[in-house]
Length: 445
Image 1 (cartoon, one colour):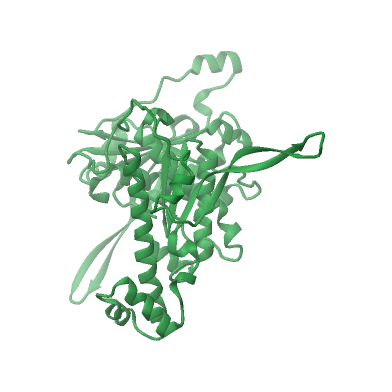
Image 2 (spheres, rainbow, N blue to C red):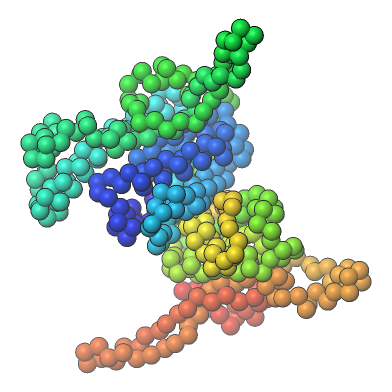
């Protein structure tokens, strides 16, 4: 989870060290991921994280990392918000959850199993420590005292502490807490019909299953060899960038976000054609919140189902790591879009999860784009429509940026300090040279 897992769990009063409902929500989102993306063959989750393994020979979005990463993190975010009420019916979602992610290539079956085993070992180590820590805190110790009591202890010491001080056998704790959760398609025999003699005729089918089992040893993998099949695959890479790629210094960074399968989404939710004003205002509201959350975004431009965000030239957001910037922005925009839905469509249920894809672009210098040529003559001759009378939001799109609205003086000690207040605004204007001449501070802050 990109926004602090500790802060998010604190605001929503999650149980410590484990909130069963929160973990089951994560598992439900992971299950939806396997339902949506058939190329995902296995998922492993613990606490606020999930790893999704794609089949080795996947051609998902031509193996383009930006598409794989943004779509997965956006869809997971969308399902998290959408399913929140199923697991917390009496608890309001007070702030938008959003996630970061990365795409990593592993060269063979052994390496991918080692990775999954490492995550489960990490789950055990962290959960055992956290179980002891929070029980000590709940028994009256301060967090600092609890940390000191556990300093230098080994696994057997923690087991003894739990047993002697709290009469808890660690092995009796829920397997979901100790082992994490595995999501995969399991082979299940089901009765389809009976023969003439009354004997059942069974067929094997794949059913998405959530299990809390050991995946460190060989037993699980020997029983489920069909999950991670090694293919004679010609791919040894994912196109575009690797996990540690950083954006070149002193380049303008643009994150372009587009709604995926938008035609189907707009049809399902009965959006007006060619423009649904309410849907566009929802996009603008989500973009405004992006500028409020990410101070390094200096400008946003959107129309229809897409929005582009320009970061200040010297941004150090996520140490300029492309995967973290891309995934966090996509996830956050998805979260804002869903949480603001009822503000704009109070009488329309969100029946299908929106999800967005994104790419990150670098520009070495400021470059002002132009809109495509209008089809004014065709509209006037065939439909008696003056295109210039259409709402500016439809014709020009929406510009989102910060504007100084107030300057005031505060007294601090013996000094008068000049303060400024900037608000995020949305306008529908020409992005010609005149716009930038009047607002030179946007791209120079």
